[in-house]
Image (cartoon, rainbow, N blue to C red):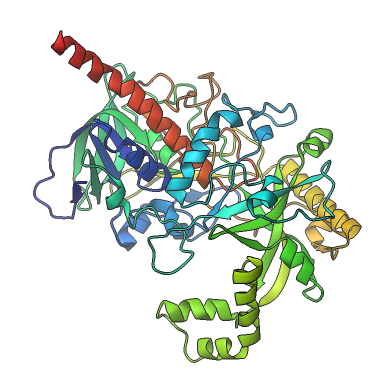
Length: 544
């Protein structure tokens, strides 16, 4: 794999020409590049950052926020560095539900042009990219047989709530156990000689032909502010839910509309996940609850148990999709955190040594649980909550547009007007109520509902975005209702593609990364099929 690290002051930028230019090296971009390796196509993978975090690159993620409160430190949700947002993600993976793909009459603008079963083979293939034990079929009652365990004798009502299991990514190449897949750290060994990785190259705008109907490449900037053009037959934007839309909106010429925005859809339908505590439990007497809804060690991977709203209750009560799990607030002297810092040679002395020494019984129990009962490590907790995460109602006025403010390359910053809908609060209220009632019925401790849930109040402003920006370049078979088609190609612009959660029409209740990777694999198959045809035709003609 050739690699070019563009540094400020470089006098020459190599002439770049390729079949496919991929923008962004996060989960979507890295997966797409890896899948296109050794394909016969020439591929350039552009990354704005480098191998280390740089303050100047962080500043390129500035936003102007005019809507619901969002995380102020953009590094916690957007990373300009090799590997992209995988640097700060929590490793949690899971599939969407079949109902998420349906057109639901109580959820405006819902419905995907594909079904969940269409993604099953790509979910299976995603396991290799994410370091998962298996890619599909693990998130429901099938988990118990996969784990070699008996299903619980008492279970919540399937008409109201269903079990759900998240799987945590693991990078076996890392020396410290249970490190999540970071995508950028070992990217070189996964890319073929046909892929050129270019770091220090910030994508500015997509270049198109005079008719604005076909891409001809990309304009990018190096750290010193100089701008360069890359010639490409196809461009795939894989830069995240905010940046994908921003690049498209900045891809305009004089009075002509931005690429893909003839119908003013780019940047609209911005969703994320509203996530936070909805109830609390007493730590006393919670051992059985924590064991049932805690972590499980299966095939050397951690799984986390939780619950989701059943499709039946969603339909009956016109609710959005929502998940819940036990939220653990760690005690300051949790010994496992202390041990992790000691192993990484970044201890807090003498506090970490004292924490380990004082909590030897907990650590012994942890070893028994992990190696014997094959559970997760028991943590020393300060607080135990019921955390919920709810999908959002697609809303065309919840959007990302362009600010008048500009970054150091002269490109307009994102202006974010993220909005919430009353049905999201109503769904989270109902989720907490159902969990409380069902736990009481089957003999688990009943949580105390949070004040805002009990009072049927709006979702607190403290529930900010959780790095899942979704929907800003949504997929639709109808160009009037979306930005990309079923193949993730921008409507009306040949050769221009978008990959990532920005193409999701709805956000579901689940963390998006595994779905993002599966969709990137699907796009890679499409590109290999489409772009290989002209090459095959040329070879056949030459042979004749």
